[in-house]
Length: 231
Length: 231
Image 1 (tube, rainbow over the protein chains, first blue to last red):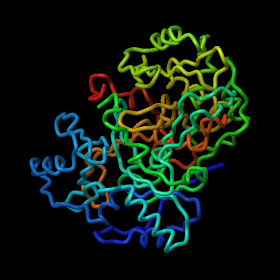
Image 2: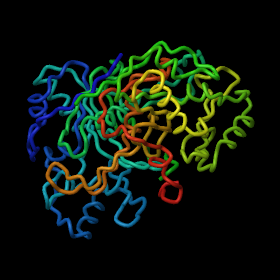
Image 3: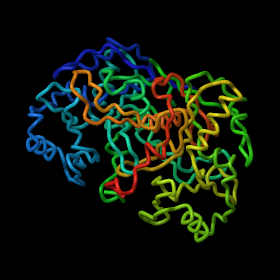
Image 4: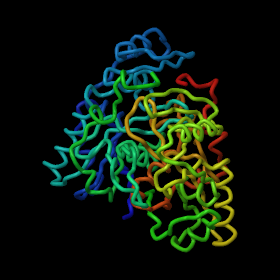
């Protein structure tokens, strides 16, 4: 079973109130079983999650980050590592000035699983396709350098696939193998998007049909504060 | 530019001293520019990184983990979060009993970048192809549930691609976008391997040719202890 990653090219600059389902269907030929990965930036823009900010006003930027944060975890220089109200651990509560018009900052969607469901439902209703949808964002990690794209919202596709108890190739029982396929798919999609290339959507074709079930980042992937050994 | 992920099927159970280059070329048609992702397990087996262990002897298992660790970071129940001598942060120093014959444990390769270089060089010499090679392993993360596959060694492909200073789609300068493409490729490959399916190699076809340069996990991805805010 091979898997194909297709960038969706030609989507114009997204503005508040835009219909992402229309943008996607205008530029992609989807088929049942595809997983559509949509970057957070255009979801936030379409949902109007933009706030004005003077990019040179550090106090104003910090206030926006504070408003989006449930906890401030670490600070070093300009870097503020936060836990958002969703439970995501990321720099600056996901507030982003890149790929946004000057003078504005994009905030994360209020409920990215819901954002994913709306797109999934819209694609079903208007293009007649049953697909999974992942809303992705670019986060840093502990312990390892470099950022990767991860899932912040999913619909119609699993967050974590539980392989516990499945026999391995030698017939022994696997101890713990809960694979976060949603993050792996989001990262894979990033490989055909590029950071500066303005390709905000990619299609992942050929994923295991068993993964195309109801999923949730909030319920499956976000590790609660009390359960985390590194926060 | 699309990207294709191809599982390499039919590789037999790998034993100490096996020639991985031969296994790979016997079962995959490679072309220049491919990235070949090889799971740590078969690299460790081929390199003879196996030690005998009684799976019911917890003290013996802990001693092996201790020997592979530079630091013990956290403990909870049977879980020991360690920093390995390579600087990887992972459970049980990467010592693994799954997909290994009963009575044996597989240790991580001593120098996974070197392991990747050997495979890359062998494929060049004997199959005449210029490819990148990633040795992958399955690690947990802070903050997020579920494991993902990441790169522990690379050759002929970048660890981190530095997009700092590249203009974004609106012409603004990107602040920090060092993308860990090696981890994203490793995770993508996992999507066609499965955990229990005995597919220890995958080919990623179509990656940006600019990424096919000399790379190193040790130098590019491993975050030094002193630089890390979460250890």
